[in-house]
Image (tube, rainbow, N blue to C red; front, side):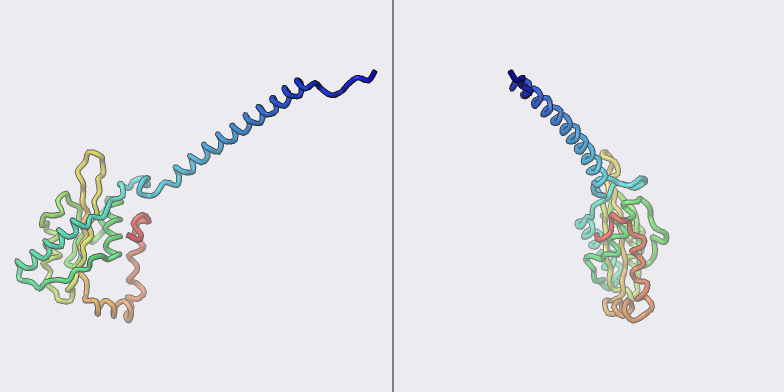
Length: 203
């Protein structure tokens, strides 16, 4: 009589079940590892607006309504002083990005108060401050245009909102075009981009 070397069905079933359980435990460990890894990578890829580098304030938001208020103050100052009305440039990349950078870093650039350019920090952008009055009342017909940028920052949840205000006077469109394309400034008029924070580029 020949002895069978084939295990019983019950033994085969137990072995198969044991193998399946081992495989499932291994897969669970692998899935858990990938979950942890994916979570860590997602945290590193959070946008600049959610996580700020050390030493930087929370990134602000452009406030167009406050820009309009500041523009009206400029017009009022000019009318009261019987000065010619200025043309307004609604959006100037260089000004917006520089003010955004100041709001982000909390640092005023050097020479932030001149006759043709001011950048200041205030809790009340609708007030006439000396910086605003200086650039608004500057009487020089070579600078018949201006632009305003206002960025709003709330440094702490319970803190008041702080406004960073930038105002710049500009040459006429024709003279600016000539200067940017037919003088030595063709090589330098984009130098401002070197001083813009990465999170503020394209604003």
